[in-house]
Length: 373
Ligand code: CO8
Image (tube, rainbow, N blue to C red; front, side):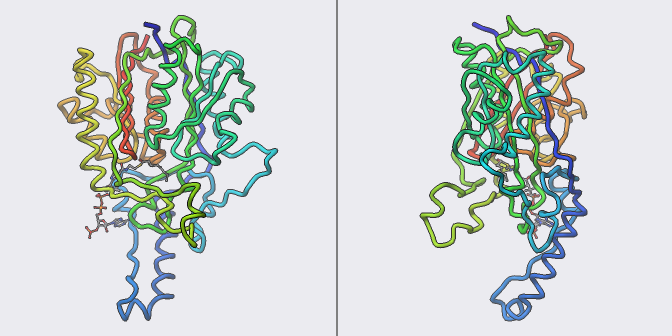
C-alpha cells in the first residue's frame, strides 16, 4: 500500500490574547449591570440573579490561562461581548482565507514545497464563514494551487478526519499532495455572557501537508501508520445555527444558535471512549502504548487529557508525554491537537511513534498513529 507522510505543518496565531483576569473582569461588570437593571424582578423572584465568574474556577476546572482571539475589544466590552469582525467586500479575501493562507505558507515552507506542488486543498473546521463559494476554493485561489478543493466539518475532529480523507485520496492515487487547513474562529460562536462556557475557546489556524512518501523530501516526516475515525451521536455538545434559522422562528438569534454543552457529561462520556478507541487501535497494530513517545491530544480540558494519558500509558504522564497548549490557546477546536503536534515533534528520532487524537462534538473521535522517519 502507498505510504503517506505528514511532511510539514503551519500555525497562525492571532496577535491579541485575553487573560482569564481580563475575561472575568469584563464578565463580572456585565453581571453587575444585569443584576442592577433587573433588581426589582430579581427581588420578586421572576428573574434569576447572575453569578460572578472566577479566575480560580476557570484555571482549576479547565487548565486554561488565556486565549488568542481575532478581536479583543469587542469581546471585552461588557456592553457588546461579541468580537467585532467587520464584513468585507466580495472582492476582498475573507478572514478565514487570510488565516488559512498564513498557516498554509508555513506548512509549505516546512515541507519544502510551493503552491504548484499541491493537488488538493481541504478546509476542515468547526464553522465556515460562508457556505459557498467554499472557503477551500478561496484558499486554493489565494495560494495559486491547481486541482480541486472542498470544505468539511466534523467539529473538534475536523483536522483528524481531514487527515484521513487526505491519506485515502493519496492512497487511491487521485492526488499526490494535499494541503489541509483548520481556520477556527471559535470566538464567533461563543456566548461570552454564559458563565459556564465563556472561557473555553480561542481562535487560531493550523495547516498540514500530506504527501505520498516516495516523493516527500522535507527534513522531518511522519509516516501515518494508521488512522481510525469514530462518531457516536450525542446532543451534549450542540449548536443549532444553520441556514434554516431565518425560516424557523421570528427570532433567529436565540442562544441555542451558539455553542452549548453539558460539560460534565462530555467529560464523563468522551474520556472512556477515547481511551477505548486508541487502545483497541494500538492493540490491533501490535503497538504497546507504553512505548509511545508522545500523545498529541485534543486540547479542551487539562484534566481530560491527563486522565486519557494516564489510562493509556498506565502511569501519571510526564509533561513531555502529553504536551499541553490549552493553557495559552484554550480550546481551539480541531486545531488543538495539530498545534500540540506542530510545537512538539522536533525531538523525534526515526522509528519513534506517537498518537495524534481529537475528540469533540458529534461525538467524534479521530486517532492517527504516526512514526518519525
Ligand atoms: N466561574 C465560577 N464558577 C463557575 C463557572 C465560572 N465561570 N462556571 C461554572 N461554575 C460553577 C458551576 O455553577 C458549578 O457550581 P455548583 O457546584 O454550585 O453547581 C461549579 O462551578 C462546577 O461546575 P461544572 O460541574 O460545570 O464544572 P466542571 O468541573 O465540569 O468544569 C468544564 C466545566 C470546564 C466545562 C468541564 O466540564 C469540561 O471541560 N468538560 C469537557 C468539555 C469538552 O471537552 N467539550 C468539548 C467541546 S468542544 C467541541 O466539540 C467543538 C465544538 C465546536 C466549536 C465551536 C466554537 C465555539
